[in-house]
Length: 68
Image 1 (cartoon, rainbow, N blue to C red):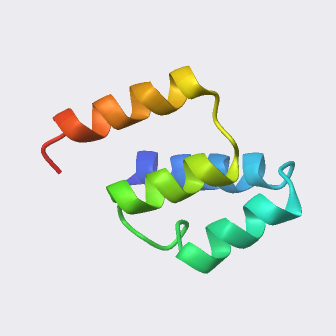
Image 2: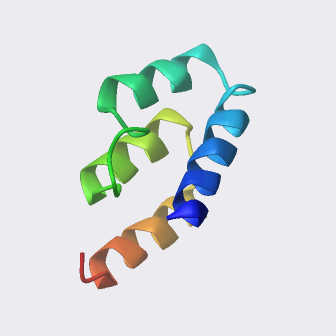
């Protein structure tokens, strides 16, 4: 449980340096409150931060092969 709390704190610290648009999307989708991110949330986050095409393709491949 402590590693989850540590990861959440690290994510919050990193988010502090991000754009207001990204912060608003994270807040709107409740990404910091959820236990896990689902595929739709990951796709929305990827769209918000404008991932390069290669990274988006890798994300899609990982989402398709995941068992979640």
